[in-house]
Amino acid sequence: MNNILIKLVASTTMTFGALALSNVALAQKVDPAVQAVMDRSFREQGIAKLDRIQQDEFQTLCSDEKFRDSPEGKKKAEALQSAALAAIKPPSDGKYLGNWAEGEKIAQSGRGATWTDNLKTVNGGGCYNCHQISKQEISYGTIGPSLLEYGKTRGNSDVILTYTWNRINNSKAYNACSNMPRMQHFNLLTEQQIKDVMALLLDPASPVNK
Image (tube, rainbow, N blue to C red; front, top):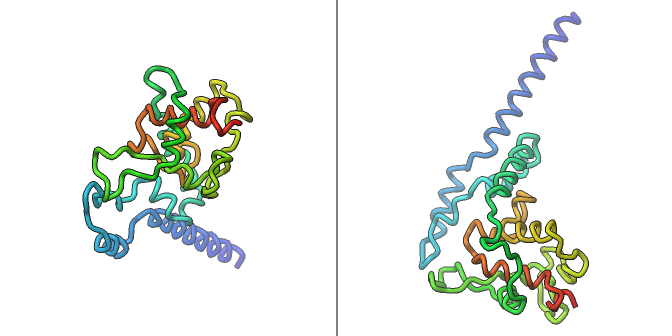
């Protein structure tokens, strides 16, 4: 009798285990019905193309909470982060800091990459949408952490320069499900613009650090 129970428990455990693995595998497949609704709900206009509604690996992972929090999901997140970090290019001339005044303009601007823009539109960073950056600005978002005194409290060591550069270029290199736009990955900001935003955060003369 005991042997029968043991075999039954083992068989049941294996069955549930197989189902769990099957569910995890299926978790990353897009429901065709959902995709069809998405396809019907959007149209191309101007520079905004339908490829924007196609999720990449990061977006697919982070949209599926069940898979994301599973051991397989966490392993995949680590792999994606490592690949993203390796893909980030340092400044071509080795200089990380540009003009903080230009960086402030970029942080304030939310222009670019919409259907009302064109390829000649200069993109902004829209940084104030999510962060408090300077004391002078009274309108800002709180989705992201406050960046007041960013450079004053952290300094500008090589480690901080590299980390800040990487975060602006592709924040998902550190957090797969970060809400921060991938400035380099989507070509939202040029190298010079990223340098200017770096200066806004790290230059002692910037209002951020006063």
